[in-house]
Amino acid sequence: MLAALLSLSGALLWGAADFLGGLTARHLKPIVVTAIAACTGVVVLLIAAPIAGGTLSAADAAWGAISGVCGVVSLALLYACLAIGPMSILSPLTAIVSAVAPMIWGVTVGGESLGPLAWAGLGVALVAVALVGFVPEQGAVRPSIRGLALAVGAGLAIGAQIIAIDHTSAESGLDALLVSRAVNVTLTVLIVAGMIAWAAARRRSVVEALRSPAAVAGSRIVWWPAAVGGVGDAVANIAMLLALRTGDLSIVAALTALYPAGTIVLAAIVLRERIAPVQIVGLTLALGAAVMLALD
Image (cartoon, rainbow, N blue to C red; front, side, top):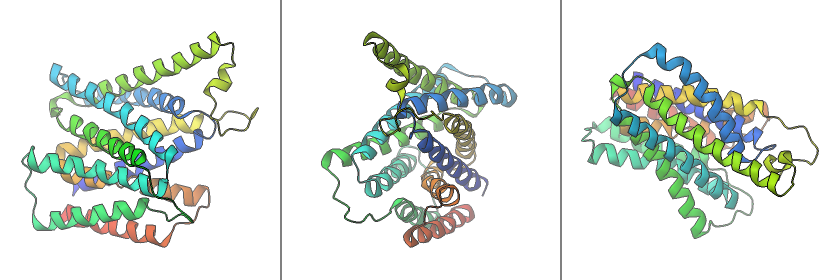
């Protein structure tokens, strides 16, 4: 029960963080948004890690670093595949792969044993992920092989990130997450610094180099949603870690993959976007799957 609740809470927070990051990406390039979120997230973990306590071993630090690298790779591939589109197909495909990969790992490598109700719940959860993320577009085109490959790669990278964190010991507290986020900060900040240096060398405006191509020229840059999203993302990571330490990897991965639900709900409330009937069905199935997994 606790693992399911933590997983769902983390998924909703991740969805909210994605929503806020998406708002900021209207003004700044995705890698800049990622760097801002990473920096505020690491502050949260710097405060929370000492409170949680724990001893970080070399193995835990290594798994944390691997998780951080996978996080950067997943974002790069995710943004690339969504830029190619169609989002209505590639986004849920990424979420499904990110759930299936840890599920397979947990059952085959991790030796997890699930009951009939849990297996049924996992199946319902996967259907829910597909329906929540799927929004039929008028005149939607078939995805290219490259788009499909990038989506699968992004899903695998997200799954690898979850698997890496699952390998950390309970004795490490939140320190492995702190290492993961520190690696994320280092890589993204170095990339942004390189972009600034490149712009300066070519005598271009630094602001224009960091501004999103979709932004209106001369408009005010809004960065704070990404900062708030980074806080939410860090808390979501803490919820996921606690869920992994109290439940099975396969179940946590399936419920965590429902993160698009948080984005959809916030978009409906803040931006007045319409929730499609198929998404409502998906959200209902997600709640049912959570109950099934919690009761197993």
